[in-house]
Length: 412
Image (cartoon, rainbow, N blue to C red; front, side, top):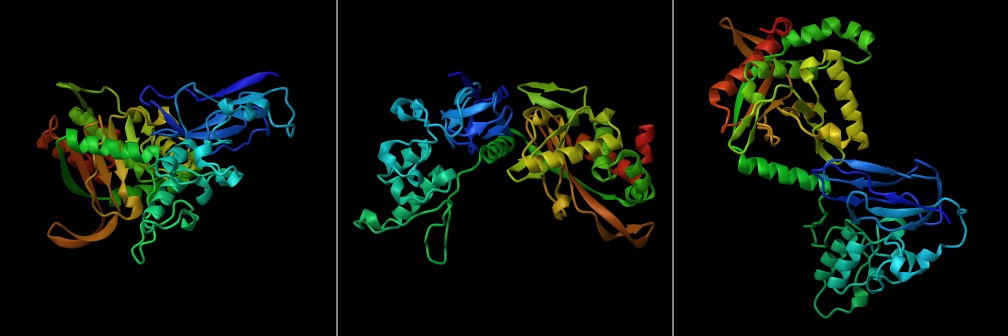
């Protein structure tokens, strides 16, 4: 028997642990080299764990929902075994039983559908409930932590003294039966919990103010219309608004470097580079991948990279290195129709630009009321190091660059 261990990939220094999601293979099944066995969720990204060798998955050491760390062994592959053979001896040994296959006897009923994951088993045992009374929503009917929480909530609604046999079969996430006022409790994903933590950190540690301005997008729209076909044909990507916003932001950051700075204790760190974070929505929540050295990127480079980020975010394929760092961020609420917002600073950055939906509005030009496609810009900034003067002038510089894009060519 030749055993190859499957380990957790190297995590970022800022990430202490991760959560196992769903195994794609069962013990005894054949696996091919580099075949994805499971996905592991960190507070930033979802990592795929490929099989390091071909063979048979002989043992799952850490099951769905388990918390793991860098280089921890999560499974074993027998490179000489044959798929479909008798169950490996390791699975018959209680001390070595994989968490995804066997659960603690106190929390399971012994049937495949009654198997509870470690976290779920612990919760059920603490509340004196049996996994046999809980319908698992995990792979092969395994009871997950969400199932356990829903079962506990449902049990709490049953009158004291009711026989345990009356406990309902609960599927997670199941709403608590409260008549016409249902509720359901769902644990935060690691990403959502991390976003919540960082937003609270930003609100509590930064002196956040927001300044607003409006910009006439007609010049940008005319430029896009004039060159869109040629641009798409030449670069294979459409010319969007975001590349203009990025260019305008970098233009302003060069004029007012403190907008691109960060706070470290009692020190101000002025960054001599421009790494712009682009807020992107994904099925897992908000992520902010970084455009490295955005000042050196062309309009085409920016559009291609943003398109790549969008696809990766949708597929859950963004890497940790793609979301680490950043000196300034841009959030585009206009994608969803937002007219105005006050974006929250992404620590340790000191400023963030919020852009919104462009709409035709009545404005006054030379004493005449005219209709123009207007966009409201909002820039939140840390007043500890950025004074109102720099914030307002920085936003005006962005406005000027967008209303007269030729300024970007001559750095005016």
